[in-house]
Length: 413
Image (cartoon, rainbow, N blue to C red; front, side):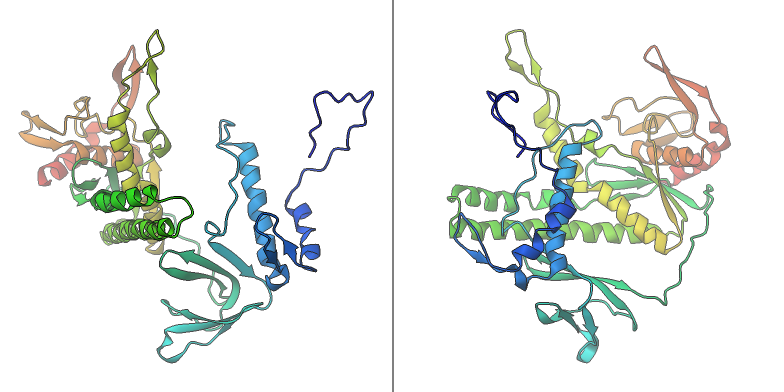
């Protein structure tokens, strides 16, 4: 709106007045006028009657647009923009929010399987309930979400009878803490500092062939055809099964960890964005691109995405908080290379999965050793390590204080 031709001169021509930058409040001012009469869509000729839509739902659209452009303009931490916000068509706009006055929550039907919610402009909506709602709650907000297998409803409730609880401060010790090392080797998901390895699900890997078959069929159909839409729905359902099975596996794994009775859980503070980053391209003097190992890296990136460790640690934090425990992220630097009971750098290569210690007559597993080291980092008993001329130098060591406990765990494992 503020642009002018390059051949326009302010001394000869009159430039238009600069317009204010649109924001949430300036967009919201247009809504009362749009609700007075129907609006014609130019490209389709369809008439839209906004008077049938709740006012706060329309305001939510303005809020989403404002947030999208604000994130686009500001960029990431380095100031790099990812791209202009994409227009949400009817097929991509899958949720709407209704809040404020007019929402009423009615009693359940026989057996408590259903809820009845009175929604403004819509009426009485019958909802299949999966959780018992306490008496006296106040319905604050309603969100309708369209997924591949139907419609879902999120209820935001306010219960004034629930007291505010301040969690107790938990001090980590060797007995009440547990550390976890993220593993992508073979069929192992996590290795704990207690010498236990938890299996992985690999939901995406196991369903990759089914997903590829449907995707290829869909891509072969012409854009906008009914057959392509049907295959897109099948593809979406397959993605939904994968995501739900992964989340179910992560909830069960988190519950198993919390049932150990530990009060402090340490995990690696992983830089997942950097771990899944593409390799930098390589070129020779003539400009020809050289092999850079991206083919193998793509498979590793897919494994990181399939494991979804960020989602798992978030779920573990929610479940641990209910049990009065805490989840703490720690920097895993050098934890996978150093022996947990002696200051020796052994695992310098990722291909080294085990180490036979002839002095202790002990087979040391790399992942369990890394989990024990991460626990030592959380308890602040890990040695201080610095790099000097490319070599790892241990400055301060207190490894002997925990060597007996570490050897006991490794022998049991």
